[in-house]
Every structure is written in structure tokens, then in C-alpha cells.
Length: 370
Image (tube, rainbow, N blue to C red; front, top):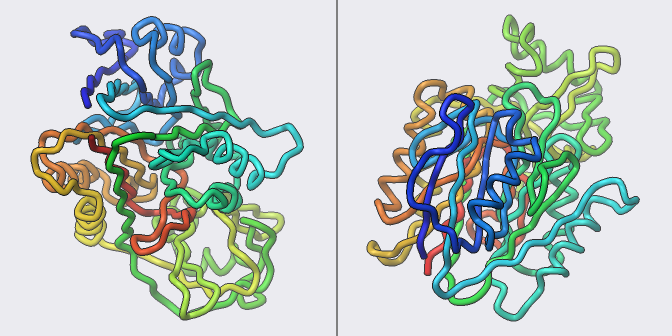
């Protein structure tokens, strides 16, 4: 495997250097309006004419151990033994999100399919429903929901064409490849265990028969004035029963008139829930655990690491955010190219089961080695 990483900025344009013109796959992540233009895709296509070009808008873009905004980061990959295929689905055709996920997996199906990496619109797509559809093929899936900084307005996905909203792209990896993943959080539950007593999909109206928004405001105190942004610091832990593994849900929006909370994934009625909080050391340590789970079997292996980390983690870590990327580099070694983005949701299995889930507030890594 060969990789080449470059960056675009409004001040300097594209970085100069030897291009990997015969690349098979190009991954682009951006928090800049240029990403949404026809020029962005056209220039990438001109530079990498043989490659599938996929990517999404971000809440911070990852290149090696650095995080940046107001630019486009690009990683070109040339496989020596593996190959890739791309499948695309758009909202608006009448199909349910779960059906779109299933159709993407069916399109990529093959005997030598090793893994699927998915990038999805982060505002219009219900990630929980998407995961249900992706799981129907019995193939390991990771990925994430596109971001829009902390604006929560509109997100964009690029798939061999102009980046658009409402799109889902799935990249299938085939052949003699080794793919591993790790997904860890680092948040702790606090306060009383409660029950979601009224919800529809990802919108929660009542918790313990109390207006959900009022309960959140009570816990946040003075920080409630900054909702929904400050809510990213206090995600919700949910589980169907105490015997099930808990999932984390990030707050995306509040409705003052309905006293409701909108989360990045489903919060089913009747589920148990608790608020969560964290400390900086715990977040960074858990990034290390994700890297340990995804590290190669050989220290000399050359590969690619795809990082999908939650925007909420970035807000909490602040200037220390790059520390979680440094610990990834420390575990994976210098022969692994690192790229990715800060997201509105992460798609990954738990470490001991194949089924993909929508997560929030996690550090999710996917490593690919030849």
C-alpha cells in the first residue's frame, strides 16, 4: 500500500508535491465551503483520474496527528493487493434509511469483501436506522456521520462527484487486506437512572414523565444557556435492559416549544437512561484503547487508519484534542497514514460482536493493512 497526503487552503491552494496519480482511492474531509463546490471535485479528479473520490464535511479534519478547520485534507491510497468499490444512495426516493443501507451492502456484496466503510449525511440521516440496514449483510462495517463544525446546519458527502447533502456512500474493501477496528468512549454515567417515557425515533419528549428539556436544563444549570452546544458535554447513556451494553447518544437540537431533545440516534421509549460526563485523561486513555484494538499484528506493516471521533470529544478536550491523535500514532507506529474527521456520530461494532451500531462521543478507528 502507498499513500500520499495533501491539503488545500484558501490562502495557498493545493500543496505541491509528487502525486500518487494512479491512486485507487482518495479520501477528502473538510470544514470549508470550497468542499461543496464543483471546482473541488473537478480538481481532485484531475489530480487522481483513476481513483474513487469520497469524503464528507467535518467538525474538524484529521491529517496525521493534526486537526484543522477551514481547509480540505486529502489522502490518496494505492493498493498492491486489495481493491475498492463504491456504492451510493440518496435520500428522497421514498425508501427508508434502513432500506438504503441494505441496498448499499447488496451492491457491494462479493465473496472477497473484507470490510465496508460508510460516510453519511449527518443531519438528515437517522444513524440508528442506517446501521440496521448495513447489518443485514453480515459484513463488518465502520464509518461515521458527516459534521458541520458546531453549527448543526447542513452536511455534505462526496462520492465520485460534487458533494451534496442527503447522501450516503459505502466503500467496499476487497482482496488480501487485513481490516481491524476499535471503538471506545471514556464517559462515565452520573445521577439517577431514569426511564425514557415518551419518544419518537431520535426525539425525546419525556424522561420519568417529566419534560425532557427541563430535566436537562436542571442538570446543566448555568450551562443550559448554551444549549444545544453545551449538551455535547453531557451525552445520554441508553440501554434496553441493565444486561445490555449501553450506547451513548449526543444531543443535536432542542425544541423549546415542545420541551424536547433531539439526539444523533434513536432513543427508544422505555429504555433506561443516565446522563454522562468525563474528564480529559479518560477520553485520551480510551483513544489509546481504540488504537490498541485496531493496531496491526506486525510492527512493520504499512497501512491506513481512518479516524472518526465525535465533535463532543473535541469540545471537551479543547487544545488537548490532538493528544488523542498522538496516542493513536504512538500505538500504530510511523508506517500507518492517519486521516479522518470529527463527526456527528460514529458507526462501528462493539469490540466483541460483528453488528454495527451508531455511537456518539467515541473514538472509532478503522485500520487497513496489506
